[in-house]
Image (cartoon, rainbow, N blue to C red):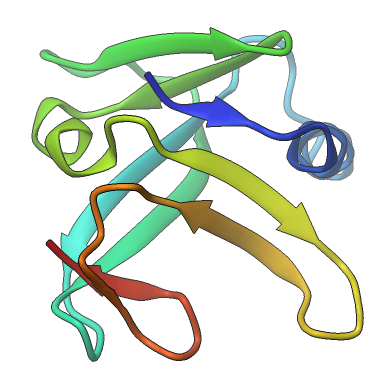
Length: 108
């Protein structure tokens, strides 16, 4: 399962409204090759399901992940911070054995 914090829920809600996305849009998370640690996180809004997608709901937010990415993201929590130490979304991934300094890439 993939979960989100309250701060991530609030930010996703405001971003959805800014983009004029209706309730048919969901949050798509994924993993792609790249970055200084080998794999990078992906986060976007989408409204089209694909074969093999895994679907979760947490705090009223629909989260979708492709089957391959899910293997890397099992148990991950999506968090949002706008404090002095950084601003943006962060993936708290228990499967990551190494994370780069910026937190945008990881390896397992």
